Image (cartoon, rainbow, N blue to C red; front, side, top):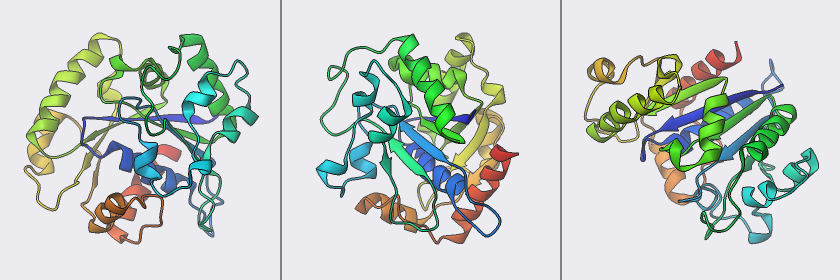
Length: 252
């Protein structure tokens, strides 16, 4: 069974970009490793992520997670046929993405049930070594996010060094604790998305909690995000090194 990794953070924390790059790190091939089969699930139906990650793909190569979850038979074939794979990078193995597409919203599909989500999760775990879930910022607004966050083997809590993110985590962490989540077990990541930061890691720790990793600002990643090429290879050594460290933490 594959590991389920939930990525959770405030709006604007860069958790979607983080999810994409974490998937690449886990999936990447090398002389020492064939890479891990990895699937990424974007759960946001309020602001669908597929148009952000794949803005330049032809419409016939875009598939919706909603088309999977309305099926009565959640077989691997159904899931694979609606998964967007990265095919033009020799350094990657089996890396696929599922998410909602442009124009979709909560009224586009019937409401999900817990049984359907559990069945979907089971198939994902059987199909991949790692399943990365890009959760919505407020899990109570998405049953899909909520249940996958609850079931995750590891939760990565992403924070940016600014007051807005701090306020969010101070508020939401209390709520998660009340609903039975265990924020103290989360892997804290400081994600620096701007060239100038409002606070340092040492400033954040007393209020954010344990920070295990820091992802440095990368102008390359900013450019990829702006032009819609997040799935292209990244050659920023410091940025890649941070994700290699996170990868080691997850696979051990």
